Every structure is written in structure tokens, then in C-alpha cells.
Image (cartoon, rainbow, N blue to C red; front, side, top):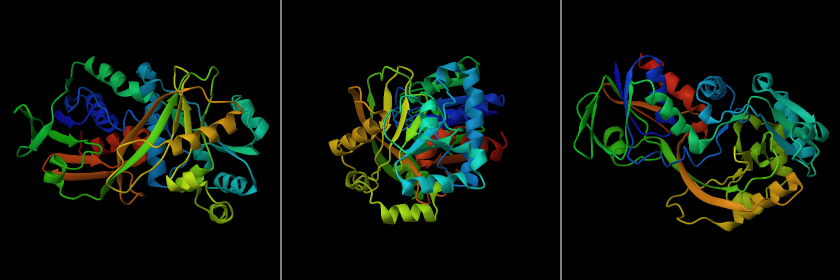
Amino acid sequence: MKVIVVGAGVVGTMHAWHAVERGHEVVHIEREAEARGASLRNFGQIWVSGRAGGEELDTALRARELWEGIGARVPGLGFRAIGSLTPVRNELELAVAEAAVARPDAAARGYKLLTADEARAVNPALRGEFEAALWCERDAAVEPRLAQLALREALLATGRYTFLPNREVRDVVGEKAVRDDRGEVHTGDAVVLCTGAWLSGLVREVAGEIPVRRVRLQMMQTAPLGEPLTTSVADADSFRYYPAYASPALDALNEGQAQDPTAAAHKMQLLMVQRLDGGLTIGDTHEYEHPFAFDTLEDPYEHLTRVVESFLGRPLPRIRRRWAGVYAQCVDTSRVVHRQRVRDGVWLVTGPGGRGMTCSPAIAETTANELGW
């Protein structure tokens, strides 16, 4: 069987991975020299902790299992089973963490409530002031700027994978074939369009208006911290953002503790993970209204710096990089992904939102199973 995959971000690359794993030939087409979108502009977090119960959590847990297995075979991914800590500072925040630990699926997530001293024993870099921390053992991390490159190298070594960069697919030709902007037609037994946040052009032509929106974010990365940050770190604003934390305790937090005005204005949460070079990736914001700004704003970065420094109890290293990114998210955010048959043998898979890096191996596995690969 020959599979044509369009788009070399993490979702497309994982579809190529599963097809090759099942013994098929893959032609992988990417409009850039390599993927440059949200698949690189993210935390590299395999983020189980905040996922909604049910399908979303099941997908994230399956993806976490797949990531670990792939990481053992492809060390260049930089897979680390580091877990995460969410420090809390007062009774209202603590109550939300306690409600999370009381969830029926808390054990599957690896939730545990730690005292401040216990949290510092897990992550000694957290020298700031906080009362307790929510630990999630199942969270993990990979290197987003390296993952697709490492996976592609492993795929090329199989002899059943062809990568065609700098080609934009312009048309779906009849059944199970696409034409690129060089005029070449690529025919297979199945075509999967993994176009990320590119929702116009070809996608609109073959699928019409789909229930997926684009979301913009801002992030930054520091110089090396000079010591290990042994876990990912979030703050209590993540309670307001992720569906797993919905509870009467969260309602009380929202009513009794106003979010910082900058964080509220930019729909922010703190997420932080250490890169293999020792730097910290820190974010993020969420912008939903079009047209998006074309510049990055300093207020969110200043807010994030204050929050991180309060947890670390020390100044941040200098900021080396700032960037914005755009990802595709289902308008109904309870949906893990938008998967649509647009022609016989041609499927569109997009819209995982901020779950793309976390869930992509399981999303692609589901596609492979549904298409009978």
C-alpha cells in the first residue's frame, strides 16, 4: 500500500510513521523546506494533566505510551518522562488541586498533592514561595525543534519513505492523488492531508468551511538556567484553562480571586519546560479574534517573567528567543481532532489545538485503524 501524506508537522509525520510501521510506502510532501509551524513553536510537552476526562484523556494517555516507545527507538526526540508540578499559593488554589486529586481518573493521570517541601525535593529549582503543588506523573517532554527531524531520519532509514520538501499541493486529482505546484501528480492508495493551520486554499476547495479555527500564541526561550529544572511547571492559571480542573472549587477560585489583568487580557497560563541545552521554554498567550496581530507584545512576557521568577526565587536567565505561532483548533474544543473524508480515499486531519504535540501519535494511530492500513 502507498500512502500520500501532505504536511510534515508532527501530525503529518506521525501519520507517516504509523503507515511505515505497518509496512506501507509513504510519500511525504511539505510546502516548506521543513515544517515551520506550530509543531516547532510549542513546549514539546506531552501534557496529560489538564485533559478532559473521557476521549481526550484516553487519547493523551495512549499518545503518552506511544511517545515513550518511539522515544526509546529514536533518541533524537529527546523524550523525558519528567512529570509536572503546578505550585499553588493559597487556599482557593489549593482547593482546586485537591478537587483534581479526588477525580476518579486521578490515578490514571498520576495526580498527587505534594507539600511545598515535597515539591522542592522533586524539583529543587523551585525555591520561591508556595503552599503546595499538584504533581502529575504522566506528563513528559520531547524537543519540538528536533522531533520531526529525528523521526524523518528514522523513516528514511526504512527505505519505504520519500520526503518531498518545497512542494505545495494545489489540487486533489480525482481519487487518491494530488498535484503539487511543480505540476507533478502523486498517486497512492490513500491520501491524508495534515495541513495544520493552513485552512484556506486547497483545504477550503476540498472540504469547504470546516468547524476549525486558528489560534495565535506567544512564547519565549531563555539562555541555560544553569541547573536542572527536573519537571515541567505550570501555574494556577492553568486551572482556569484546562478542562480537567472544572469543579465547584474552580468556580470559587474564579469568583474569589481575580486573574491578573494582563493574564486575563491575553488568556494566559504559565507553562514552562527545560530544553536539553538548559534553556527554558516559557508561555503562553491565546488570541482568537481575527485578524491576528503581526507583532509580539511585551506585557505578556513581563507577566510570565514575574510568575516564573516568583517560583524559582531567582532572576530568569536572559531571553534568547521570542516568537508567535498559530495552530488549528476545533471550534468545539471537546473534540480531539477534525477528521473528515473529503474524497474517496482522501482524508483531512486537522484541528487538534494545543493538543497536537501531546496527542499526535494516537491521532495518527486512530486514522490508520479507521482507514484499515
